[in-house]
Amino acid sequence: MRAAQAQWEISSTPSFVINNKTVLSGGQPIEAFEQAIEGDNGE
Image (tube, rainbow, N blue to C red; front, side, top):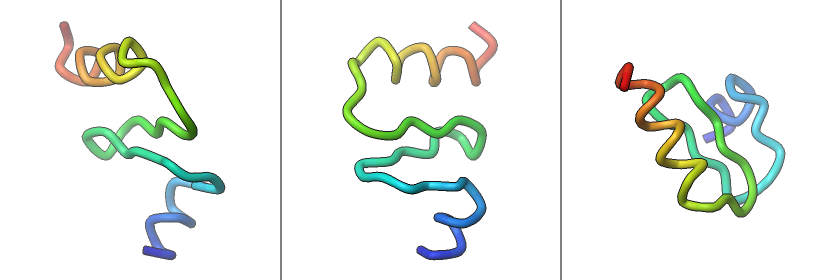
């Protein structure tokens, strides 16, 4: 867990790493998750 925290510079909870590319920290609206997921899929 600490390795992931250091790798992604995570300093708050909740934190989500999406497809090993994007980090979302703190409370986020569903649109932020949709954008992160769709952006990683090239859509």
